[in-house]
Length: 189
Image 1 (cartoon, rainbow, N blue to C red):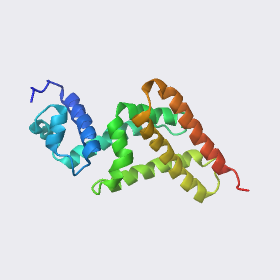
Image 2 (cartoon, rainbow, N blue to C red):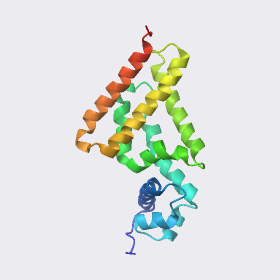
Image 3 (cartoon, rainbow, N blue to C red):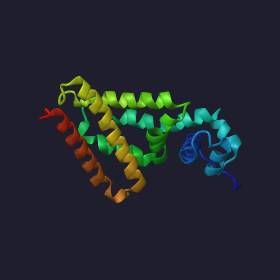
Image 4 (cartoon, helix red, strand yellow):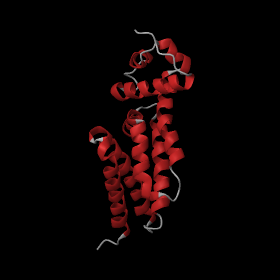
């Protein structure tokens, strides 16, 4: 193994989180070892353990690497930029974003945390769509559905889209969310 490049503590931690996100995404929690993460990062397992006491702590750090920027970026009352914000965070942390949305809820150790994140996102969406949908049952369902649409759409774009078309994609995703909400606010005939 080549000698590890000297990085600041924060830079090394970020490097390890990025390597871990890719490793967990490829192998799942049970199929990924600290040795696998070390190999992906080009460091020794000892360096990984200097930063993270356990594999669980490392997985949580990967999830936090996405949750924290989302928490910081989202401001109540800014629904017109949600797709742009999500895509920006997704592009900055693509593997961690996919891990949070697609995989963490299927990992027994992290399922409750992943569901709690989904609930917080749905509550945020519920507040935004409340003025448009009076029926509480439809609104609650709609909030969860629009969150799934947005996050799932970002994951699909990260898988198949190109960065040169990100702005166009974000506008289309946002327009689709708006159309869904509008259709749910109309009475069914």
